[in-house]
Length: 92
Length: 465
Image (cartoon, rainbow over all chains, first blue to last red; front, side, top):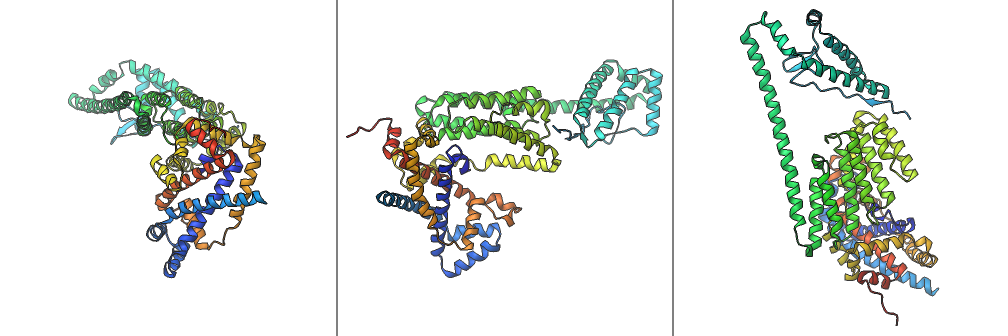
């Protein structure tokens, strides 16, 4: 889906955008996971190792419902980091 | 090219008259006559000297032999077509002779008149029922077309000061009608599309939505090909002309390669419904300009033609589902998420201005031609790579969760029927859309400068101090 939207852009922009999105999703999941207590972490491991679709869906709905907001915050943070990195590279 | 294997579709027997002469109606099913009935029939033929009937029997035999084959070669197909034409012509001639009257006369001696009348009444009753059913169907179709045209007229009459609402209504109407639009040979939908092109609204990513809609209509035309009651040549001409006409509209998201991709999808959908390549699909493939897409299309069609009927059905189903998944999320949702990520009003205005947005994306697509922008992009890429490389070790549970969110289901759950129902996939598609759009805009602002984006939004150049 998102690929369709990026298809008419040059491959370098498309690839960079996709990699950034991947990083944002990973970081957001890490943060959401860190916020879980040990019992929930074990439950998540069990469900995502062998659980069925319904269990996975239910787990995300019940315990990671804030993921969307975390992703939006992570996106903003990454923008700041990119700008900072760019400035540093510029100074060097 | 080896397009020999064309699945053979048997002719459905009619309940009013035998599909081929000589068949016997028993318990509502036409069956071959047994030997006794056959001999009797042949004797009767000889006696009455019905040369036409004899010829029809022969044709019937030849057609039956062809029908018994699992697959037909192009030569077989041609032969079948010729035989059917010959058969229909002869059959028509035979019916023009007062056959029924003669039959009645010969039967009169054997059977009672009352019995014959009863049979005749039954037959007439069946015919009447069938014709009533057809009439009702035609009436309903007519009503549907009228309703569509009424809706279109209502939208046309809406005041022009609310262009956005008008365009949204056109898009909704197209979406609701596209799978039934074959009823009026897609005339109504094409008229609506012309109105949509004239409407010039300020809707978020309007041209993208339009490109998506062109593709959806073209795919619907191909998917409903067999329902569509028109000559093959006419149908193919309408599909091709629609795609061609829409691709001529200036749209960054519907450029020549996008048009070729649509034609490729149409060809695959038709092939999966056993529409022959030669004389049908080839006329669509001919219009594909990009040689790579063209050769890909031909090779995929060859593959489809070798597939079993079940595999073809599955492919058709998948391609139909593809239309529904991956669509652009609702405008309001994207706006809300972009707003939360801090996208300014000015940038939002660009997203609502099809021409400005196309210009920006077009210029972005040309970055390799501008050495200055290329240099800036390298700087940006270096800064981004630092972040990507800094990735922490991700625990396997999170990798699985990421796969689930992005793909909807893991490999081992591939056959699970719930796969398509993963609401998380849908929710994250919307989120992914907004974030990717945001990232692209961010990169463009970094490459071309924020001032450049503001200028596109307001249409004014910023004065240099």
